[in-house]
Length: 492
Length: 95
Image (cartoon, rainbow over all chains, first blue to last red; front, side):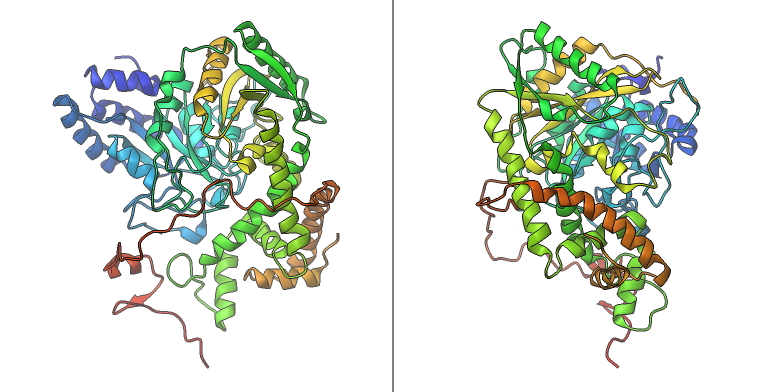
């Protein structure tokens, strides 16, 4: 039999339904791959092999009766940000080492209700704060891709680096991920995979370890646009347990595929041309424009004048929300507690100093600073006003365009260790993705080409709120036009 | 705007993160660098702009004020660093 782990989610679901192979077979194939690859890639922090095989056998029993949900029997990887009942969930932090949730996140509960199989929990930047997976308490994930020009180990991006690496390395059919400033789309771009962040409020945040609640949104990382449409649909639902969950219907986004883009108006924002952007990124963007034009879309130059302020605004808003959210880690009810302390305050401070890594501490400190008396208005309130300016920029163009095309990232995957010394250089990774979080809009990254070293590059499509349908329509045409078939060579 | 070591000490305490003395200066430099970069927000005209606290254009939902969950003492305590007799056990905080 051909290698089941190389199948797309769609092909695997078809094969399972036709009973060409069993869920147990494909699950075992992935377990074998994970065991061989994980020492090198470090994508999984917990493997749930026994649970996976139990779930697979239950799926096989349902499939044998001609029953089964939309994901019946499909082995998936779960970002360690999603609480999984009875399975350790740490969000990549020592603070939560050994934390075993007695409940299930809504997103993962939706997947199991649809018949999916859990292979394990995927590595990530600590509390999703990072763009390279180097802030994880479990050590960095490695990208399955290497540049032809060097043997250096590359980052898969972050914070959903484990998810991206696992999908690109055939260690799961598809994976869940989450995106606060670009944490789905940047790793997808770095690994030649597809990643979509839906409209804020589509996917429930219940049971997702919180980073910045007004920005956090779950989404999938997959091998194809079609797979993303399938998995996103299962992940999304209205959830009374999340106060910002949208009470809207979740459409079948696969209906958008194959529609083409004839007559669609695609915006190209001039402010996304940034200083020092490699020529290869500009060339890829130009190619994307040509593909859409050739497919019958109308290209419209647009202006989103406040784009350059998105990242600095984000680096006030996200740390401020994080400093509030992560106040819960006080060492009392769950999480790490320091063994020695002289007073209550000392216990809090020591537990948090021991439990949180450097980047998390840095962001919590910034957050406390911008929220502190005397600085609240100058920093936090101003950033919220700038956020509205950024959202208004988008509102002002939606009467002229149906979707927006940009690069996903300002570069291809970089080497581990490259940007560790300068936090701002690291933050600039999210320059093209963060606007969609601030404005709550859907954004997808599609692999569209390779750089001179053979590393994947992605294009991003941003759509109107709740208009994932058009985003998928455009992404589908980009995918078809790019014909991206490159795969990483196994070095592990 | 530059942050000095004394400010870092104060803010680290606000964030309840124990920060050793020798880390204060380097942290002050890092945070000053980040805040310098953030200063560019002052270029934006935000006169009359309402702060945007949420992406969701709907009022927060209210639910009936009824018990929907509970009676889960064991689950609630299952991740406690220390517990006994249905309680969280914490160090003595009153001298």
